[in-house]
Image (cartoon, rainbow, N blue to C red; front, top):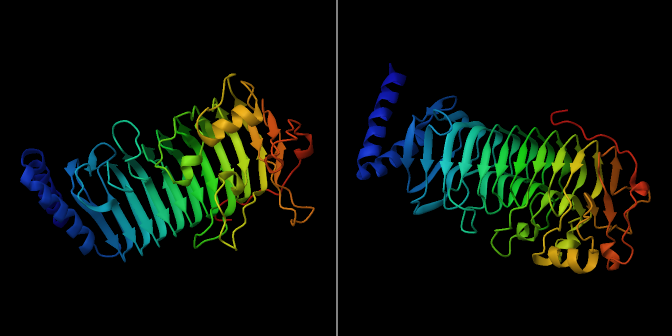
Length: 398
Protein backbone atom coordinates (compact mmCIF):
# COMPACT_ATOMS: atom_id res chain seq x y z
CA UNK A 1 0.00 0.00 0.00
CA UNK A 2 2.86 2.38 0.80
CA UNK A 3 4.37 2.06 -2.69
CA UNK A 4 0.98 2.61 -4.36
CA UNK A 5 0.37 5.71 -2.22
CA UNK A 6 3.84 6.98 -3.10
CA UNK A 7 3.17 6.66 -6.84
CA UNK A 8 -0.30 8.19 -6.47
CA UNK A 9 1.18 11.25 -4.77
CA UNK A 10 3.76 11.47 -7.55
CA UNK A 11 0.97 11.28 -10.12
CA UNK A 12 -0.82 14.16 -8.46
CA UNK A 13 2.44 16.10 -8.39
CA UNK A 14 3.06 15.47 -12.09
CA UNK A 15 -0.40 16.86 -12.89
CA UNK A 16 0.48 20.01 -10.98
CA UNK A 17 3.77 20.28 -12.87
CA UNK A 18 2.00 20.31 -16.20
CA UNK A 19 -0.59 22.87 -15.14
CA UNK A 20 0.94 25.19 -12.56
CA UNK A 21 4.30 26.94 -12.70
CA UNK A 22 4.37 27.43 -8.94
CA UNK A 23 4.45 23.66 -8.46
CA UNK A 24 8.02 23.43 -9.79
CA UNK A 25 9.78 24.16 -6.45
CA UNK A 26 7.59 21.51 -4.85
CA UNK A 27 8.80 18.94 -7.40
CA UNK A 28 12.42 19.84 -6.69
CA UNK A 29 11.83 19.51 -2.97
CA UNK A 30 9.97 16.21 -3.32
CA UNK A 31 12.73 14.52 -5.36
CA UNK A 32 15.51 15.81 -3.15
CA UNK A 33 13.68 14.78 0.02
CA UNK A 34 13.22 11.26 -1.37
CA UNK A 35 16.96 11.08 -2.09
CA UNK A 36 17.89 12.31 1.38
CA UNK A 37 15.52 9.94 3.16
CA UNK A 38 16.25 6.91 0.98
CA UNK A 39 17.25 4.00 3.19
CA UNK A 40 20.05 1.68 2.15
CA UNK A 41 18.74 -1.05 -0.14
CA UNK A 42 15.73 0.90 -1.45
CA UNK A 43 14.58 2.27 -4.81
CA UNK A 44 13.67 5.91 -5.40
CA UNK A 45 11.02 5.66 -8.12
CA UNK A 46 10.40 8.70 -10.34
CA UNK A 47 7.13 8.67 -12.28
CA UNK A 48 6.52 9.50 -15.90
CA UNK A 49 6.41 13.20 -16.69
CA UNK A 50 8.57 16.15 -17.62
CA UNK A 51 9.87 17.94 -14.52
CA UNK A 52 11.58 21.33 -14.69
CA UNK A 53 14.18 21.73 -11.94
CA UNK A 54 16.01 24.86 -10.88
CA UNK A 55 18.80 23.28 -8.86
CA UNK A 56 21.05 20.24 -8.61
CA UNK A 57 19.87 16.99 -7.07
CA UNK A 58 22.22 15.04 -4.81
CA UNK A 59 22.59 11.62 -3.23
CA UNK A 60 25.39 10.96 -0.77
CA UNK A 61 26.62 8.33 1.68
CA UNK A 62 24.15 5.67 0.51
CA UNK A 63 24.47 1.94 -0.14
CA UNK A 64 22.52 -0.25 -2.55
CA UNK A 65 20.18 2.50 -3.74
CA UNK A 66 18.53 2.64 -7.16
CA UNK A 67 17.18 5.83 -8.73
CA UNK A 68 14.74 4.67 -11.40
CA UNK A 69 12.57 6.50 -13.85
CA UNK A 70 9.70 5.22 -15.96
CA UNK A 71 11.90 5.08 -19.08
CA UNK A 72 13.88 7.23 -21.48
CA UNK A 73 11.62 9.97 -22.78
CA UNK A 74 8.99 9.09 -20.17
CA UNK A 75 10.69 10.48 -17.07
CA UNK A 76 12.43 13.70 -18.13
CA UNK A 77 14.35 15.92 -15.72
CA UNK A 78 14.93 19.26 -17.40
CA UNK A 79 17.49 21.68 -15.98
CA UNK A 80 17.10 24.30 -18.68
CA UNK A 81 16.20 26.95 -16.10
CA UNK A 82 18.82 25.85 -13.56
CA UNK A 83 19.94 28.64 -11.23
CA UNK A 84 21.57 26.68 -8.40
CA UNK A 85 24.39 24.15 -8.53
CA UNK A 86 26.28 22.86 -11.54
CA UNK A 87 25.38 19.21 -12.04
CA UNK A 88 21.95 17.89 -12.78
CA UNK A 89 22.46 14.93 -10.42
CA UNK A 90 25.48 14.42 -8.17
CA UNK A 91 26.23 11.19 -6.29
CA UNK A 92 29.09 11.02 -3.78
CA UNK A 93 30.59 8.52 -1.36
CA UNK A 94 28.28 5.63 -2.12
CA UNK A 95 28.33 1.89 -2.68
CA UNK A 96 26.36 0.01 -5.32
CA UNK A 97 24.31 2.85 -6.75
CA UNK A 98 22.20 2.43 -9.89
CA UNK A 99 20.70 5.23 -11.98
CA UNK A 100 18.41 4.04 -14.77
CA UNK A 101 15.49 4.58 -17.13
CA UNK A 102 15.24 8.35 -17.53
CA UNK A 103 16.29 11.42 -19.48
CA UNK A 104 18.26 14.37 -18.10
CA UNK A 105 18.51 17.54 -20.17
CA UNK A 106 20.28 20.88 -20.33
CA UNK A 107 22.09 20.98 -16.99
CA UNK A 108 24.26 23.99 -16.35
CA UNK A 109 27.29 21.74 -15.87
CA UNK A 110 27.57 17.95 -16.03
CA UNK A 111 24.32 16.01 -16.38
CA UNK A 112 25.28 13.24 -13.91
CA UNK A 113 28.49 13.30 -11.86
CA UNK A 114 29.46 10.53 -9.46
CA UNK A 115 32.52 10.69 -7.21
CA UNK A 116 34.04 8.19 -4.80
CA UNK A 117 31.44 5.52 -5.52
CA UNK A 118 32.33 1.83 -5.43
CA UNK A 119 29.86 0.14 -7.72
CA UNK A 120 28.10 2.69 -9.94
CA UNK A 121 25.77 1.60 -12.74
CA UNK A 122 24.28 3.90 -15.36
CA UNK A 123 21.67 2.02 -17.37
CA UNK A 124 19.24 3.07 -20.09
CA UNK A 125 19.77 6.81 -19.75
CA UNK A 126 19.63 9.71 -22.17
CA UNK A 127 21.72 12.72 -21.17
CA UNK A 128 21.59 15.60 -23.58
CA UNK A 129 21.84 19.26 -24.31
CA UNK A 130 19.08 20.16 -26.69
CA UNK A 131 19.60 22.48 -29.64
CA UNK A 132 22.77 22.88 -31.65
CA UNK A 133 26.14 21.85 -30.13
CA UNK A 134 27.73 24.87 -28.44
CA UNK A 135 30.55 25.79 -26.06
CA UNK A 136 28.12 26.83 -23.32
CA UNK A 137 26.76 23.30 -22.98
CA UNK A 138 27.89 21.36 -19.92
CA UNK A 139 31.20 19.54 -20.07
CA UNK A 140 30.15 15.92 -19.45
CA UNK A 141 27.00 13.89 -19.89
CA UNK A 142 27.89 10.91 -17.70
CA UNK A 143 30.89 11.68 -15.46
CA UNK A 144 32.07 9.05 -12.96
CA UNK A 145 35.38 10.16 -11.45
CA UNK A 146 37.51 8.43 -8.80
CA UNK A 147 35.09 5.51 -8.81
CA UNK A 148 35.48 1.74 -8.86
CA UNK A 149 33.42 -0.91 -10.62
CA UNK A 150 31.77 1.39 -13.12
CA UNK A 151 29.16 0.13 -15.58
CA UNK A 152 27.69 2.34 -18.29
CA UNK A 153 25.15 0.27 -20.21
CA UNK A 154 22.77 1.18 -23.04
CA UNK A 155 23.08 4.93 -22.49
CA UNK A 156 23.00 7.81 -24.98
CA UNK A 157 24.90 11.10 -24.66
CA UNK A 158 24.35 14.15 -26.85
CA UNK A 159 25.79 17.66 -27.00
CA UNK A 160 28.54 17.69 -24.33
CA UNK A 161 31.17 20.39 -24.81
CA UNK A 162 33.83 17.98 -23.54
CA UNK A 163 32.84 14.29 -23.48
CA UNK A 164 29.42 12.70 -23.68
CA UNK A 165 30.49 9.61 -21.73
CA UNK A 166 33.59 10.24 -19.62
CA UNK A 167 35.27 8.03 -17.06
CA UNK A 168 38.15 9.61 -15.15
CA UNK A 169 40.64 8.34 -12.56
CA UNK A 170 38.59 5.20 -12.03
CA UNK A 171 39.12 1.43 -12.00
CA UNK A 172 37.31 -1.56 -13.45
CA UNK A 173 35.05 0.00 -16.05
CA UNK A 174 32.59 -1.32 -18.61
CA UNK A 175 31.09 0.95 -21.28
CA UNK A 176 28.84 -1.18 -23.48
CA UNK A 177 26.05 -0.75 -26.01
CA UNK A 178 26.04 3.04 -25.75
CA UNK A 179 25.50 5.76 -28.34
CA UNK A 180 27.29 9.12 -28.42
CA UNK A 181 26.82 11.85 -30.99
CA UNK A 182 27.13 15.65 -31.32
CA UNK A 183 29.71 15.78 -28.51
CA UNK A 184 33.28 17.01 -28.75
CA UNK A 185 34.40 13.55 -27.55
CA UNK A 186 31.88 10.77 -27.77
CA UNK A 187 33.45 8.42 -25.21
CA UNK A 188 36.57 9.17 -23.18
CA UNK A 189 38.57 7.03 -20.76
CA UNK A 190 41.08 9.18 -18.86
CA UNK A 191 43.75 8.18 -16.30
CA UNK A 192 41.76 5.03 -15.61
CA UNK A 193 42.84 1.42 -15.10
CA UNK A 194 40.99 -1.57 -16.49
CA UNK A 195 38.30 -0.64 -19.03
CA UNK A 196 36.27 -2.55 -21.62
CA UNK A 197 34.69 -0.25 -24.19
CA UNK A 198 32.60 -2.36 -26.55
CA UNK A 199 29.50 -2.57 -28.75
CA UNK A 200 29.15 1.22 -28.84
CA UNK A 201 28.22 3.57 -31.67
CA UNK A 202 30.17 6.83 -31.72
CA UNK A 203 29.27 9.07 -34.64
CA UNK A 204 29.03 12.74 -35.60
CA UNK A 205 31.30 13.84 -32.75
CA UNK A 206 34.57 15.73 -33.14
CA UNK A 207 36.34 12.60 -31.84
CA UNK A 208 34.66 9.24 -31.46
CA UNK A 209 36.58 7.44 -28.70
CA UNK A 210 39.52 8.86 -26.74
CA UNK A 211 41.86 7.09 -24.30
CA UNK A 212 44.02 9.69 -22.53
CA UNK A 213 46.52 10.01 -19.72
CA UNK A 214 47.00 13.59 -18.55
CA UNK A 215 49.36 15.17 -16.00
CA UNK A 216 48.53 16.85 -12.69
CA UNK A 217 45.83 14.38 -11.65
CA UNK A 218 45.55 12.28 -8.48
CA UNK A 219 45.56 8.98 -10.37
CA UNK A 220 48.69 9.26 -12.48
CA UNK A 221 48.76 6.27 -14.77
CA UNK A 222 45.96 4.70 -16.74
CA UNK A 223 46.00 1.63 -18.94
CA UNK A 224 44.77 -1.92 -19.41
CA UNK A 225 42.04 -0.67 -21.76
CA UNK A 226 40.29 -2.72 -24.43
CA UNK A 227 38.32 -0.98 -27.20
CA UNK A 228 36.52 -3.56 -29.33
CA UNK A 229 33.45 -4.30 -31.44
CA UNK A 230 32.54 -0.62 -31.79
CA UNK A 231 31.22 1.32 -34.77
CA UNK A 232 33.15 4.59 -34.97
CA UNK A 233 32.02 6.61 -37.96
CA UNK A 234 31.68 10.09 -39.43
CA UNK A 235 33.18 11.89 -36.45
CA UNK A 236 33.72 15.09 -38.41
CA UNK A 237 31.92 17.65 -36.25
CA UNK A 238 33.73 20.97 -35.80
CA UNK A 239 35.30 21.21 -32.36
CA UNK A 240 33.12 23.38 -30.10
CA UNK A 241 34.96 22.90 -26.79
CA UNK A 242 35.69 26.05 -24.79
CA UNK A 243 39.19 27.36 -25.39
CA UNK A 244 41.78 26.01 -22.98
CA UNK A 245 40.25 22.54 -22.61
CA UNK A 246 42.54 19.71 -23.67
CA UNK A 247 39.82 18.32 -25.94
CA UNK A 248 39.81 21.64 -27.78
CA UNK A 249 42.99 20.27 -29.40
CA UNK A 250 41.21 17.22 -30.85
CA UNK A 251 40.90 17.71 -34.61
CA UNK A 252 37.55 17.33 -36.30
CA UNK A 253 37.56 14.01 -38.09
CA UNK A 254 39.07 11.86 -35.33
CA UNK A 255 37.80 8.31 -35.04
CA UNK A 256 40.01 7.25 -32.14
CA UNK A 257 42.86 8.97 -30.32
CA UNK A 258 45.27 7.35 -27.87
CA UNK A 259 47.23 9.96 -25.90
CA UNK A 260 50.15 9.08 -23.63
CA UNK A 261 48.61 6.00 -22.10
CA UNK A 262 49.71 2.38 -21.81
CA UNK A 263 48.54 -1.13 -22.59
CA UNK A 264 45.62 -0.42 -24.91
CA UNK A 265 44.21 -3.08 -27.22
CA UNK A 266 42.04 -1.91 -30.12
CA UNK A 267 40.40 -4.69 -32.10
CA UNK A 268 37.38 -5.75 -34.14
CA UNK A 269 36.16 -2.19 -34.60
CA UNK A 270 34.70 -0.63 -37.74
CA UNK A 271 36.30 2.78 -38.18
CA UNK A 272 34.64 4.55 -41.08
CA UNK A 273 34.88 7.96 -42.79
CA UNK A 274 36.65 9.94 -40.10
CA UNK A 275 38.32 12.54 -42.27
CA UNK A 276 41.50 13.33 -40.28
CA UNK A 277 42.47 10.32 -38.14
CA UNK A 278 41.04 6.84 -38.22
CA UNK A 279 43.23 6.03 -35.21
CA UNK A 280 45.87 8.38 -33.83
CA UNK A 281 48.56 7.35 -31.34
CA UNK A 282 50.34 10.38 -29.95
CA UNK A 283 52.54 11.55 -27.10
CA UNK A 284 51.60 14.42 -24.82
CA UNK A 285 54.24 16.54 -26.56
CA UNK A 286 51.84 16.95 -29.48
CA UNK A 287 49.60 19.09 -27.29
CA UNK A 288 52.44 21.65 -26.97
CA UNK A 289 51.51 22.09 -23.31
CA UNK A 290 54.27 22.25 -20.65
CA UNK A 291 54.75 19.24 -18.37
CA UNK A 292 55.26 20.16 -14.71
CA UNK A 293 54.23 16.82 -13.21
CA UNK A 294 57.45 14.91 -12.50
CA UNK A 295 55.55 11.61 -12.12
CA UNK A 296 53.81 11.84 -15.48
CA UNK A 297 54.79 9.64 -18.42
CA UNK A 298 54.03 11.50 -21.67
CA UNK A 299 54.71 8.54 -24.00
CA UNK A 300 52.17 5.95 -25.21
CA UNK A 301 53.43 2.38 -24.87
CA UNK A 302 52.15 -1.06 -25.76
CA UNK A 303 49.34 -0.01 -28.08
CA UNK A 304 48.00 -2.98 -30.07
CA UNK A 305 45.80 -2.21 -33.08
CA UNK A 306 44.61 -5.37 -34.80
CA UNK A 307 41.75 -6.93 -36.73
CA UNK A 308 39.91 -3.65 -37.31
CA UNK A 309 38.19 -2.61 -40.52
CA UNK A 310 38.95 0.85 -41.90
CA UNK A 311 37.12 2.70 -44.62
CA UNK A 312 37.55 6.30 -45.73
CA UNK A 313 36.56 8.12 -48.88
CA UNK A 314 39.32 10.27 -50.38
CA UNK A 315 39.15 13.79 -49.02
CA UNK A 316 41.05 16.47 -47.14
CA UNK A 317 41.50 16.29 -43.37
CA UNK A 318 40.58 19.20 -41.13
CA UNK A 319 42.05 22.55 -42.09
CA UNK A 320 41.37 24.12 -38.69
CA UNK A 321 43.58 24.59 -35.62
CA UNK A 322 47.14 23.42 -35.06
CA UNK A 323 46.40 19.98 -36.46
CA UNK A 324 44.95 21.56 -39.58
CA UNK A 325 48.14 23.54 -40.08
CA UNK A 326 50.20 20.40 -39.55
CA UNK A 327 48.21 18.48 -42.14
CA UNK A 328 48.51 21.30 -44.68
CA UNK A 329 52.11 22.40 -44.32
CA UNK A 330 54.01 19.54 -42.66
CA UNK A 331 52.38 16.24 -43.57
CA UNK A 332 51.03 17.10 -47.01
CA UNK A 333 48.97 13.96 -47.38
CA UNK A 334 46.46 15.74 -49.56
CA UNK A 335 43.34 13.63 -49.86
CA UNK A 336 45.26 10.41 -49.16
CA UNK A 337 45.24 10.60 -45.36
CA UNK A 338 46.49 7.44 -43.57
CA UNK A 339 44.03 5.52 -41.45
CA UNK A 340 46.49 4.99 -38.59
CA UNK A 341 48.87 7.81 -37.62
CA UNK A 342 51.62 7.59 -35.00
CA UNK A 343 53.56 10.69 -34.05
CA UNK A 344 56.76 8.64 -33.86
CA UNK A 345 57.90 10.21 -30.58
CA UNK A 346 59.70 7.65 -28.40
CA UNK A 347 61.36 7.62 -24.99
CA UNK A 348 65.12 7.27 -25.39
CA UNK A 349 65.35 5.88 -21.86
CA UNK A 350 62.83 3.10 -22.41
CA UNK A 351 64.01 -0.53 -22.57
CA UNK A 352 64.92 -1.67 -26.07
CA UNK A 353 62.28 -4.41 -25.86
CA UNK A 354 59.44 -1.97 -25.17
CA UNK A 355 57.11 -1.36 -28.10
CA UNK A 356 55.01 1.69 -28.75
CA UNK A 357 52.64 0.21 -31.29
CA UNK A 358 51.93 -3.15 -32.88
CA UNK A 359 49.75 -3.42 -35.97
CA UNK A 360 48.26 -6.58 -37.43
CA UNK A 361 45.40 -7.75 -39.67
CA UNK A 362 43.75 -4.36 -40.08
CA UNK A 363 41.58 -4.48 -43.20
CA UNK A 364 42.09 -1.64 -45.72
CA UNK A 365 44.36 0.20 -43.25
CA UNK A 366 47.11 2.58 -44.33
CA UNK A 367 49.71 3.87 -41.89
CA UNK A 368 52.14 6.71 -41.28
CA UNK A 369 54.86 7.41 -38.73
CA UNK A 370 54.97 11.19 -39.01
CA UNK A 371 58.32 11.62 -37.17
CA UNK A 372 57.01 14.58 -35.18
CA UNK A 373 59.98 14.56 -32.81
CA UNK A 374 62.29 15.24 -35.74
CA UNK A 375 60.22 18.04 -37.26
CA UNK A 376 58.50 15.62 -39.66
CA UNK A 377 61.67 15.07 -41.66
CA UNK A 378 61.43 11.31 -42.10
CA UNK A 379 57.73 10.57 -42.51
CA UNK A 380 57.26 6.90 -43.33
CA UNK A 381 54.18 5.05 -44.55
CA UNK A 382 55.76 1.65 -44.16
CA UNK A 383 53.94 -0.36 -41.47
CA UNK A 384 56.27 -3.35 -41.74
CA UNK A 385 58.49 -2.43 -38.73
CA UNK A 386 55.38 -2.34 -36.55
CA UNK A 387 53.86 -5.65 -37.59
CA UNK A 388 54.06 -7.49 -34.30
CA UNK A 389 52.09 -8.94 -31.41
CA UNK A 390 51.62 -7.78 -27.83
CA UNK A 391 50.13 -9.80 -24.98
CA UNK A 392 46.36 -9.36 -24.94
CA UNK A 393 44.94 -6.98 -22.36
CA UNK A 394 42.89 -8.78 -19.73
CA UNK A 395 39.13 -8.37 -19.72
CA UNK A 396 37.65 -6.33 -16.91
CA UNK A 397 37.10 -8.50 -13.86
CA UNK A 398 39.71 -11.05 -14.86
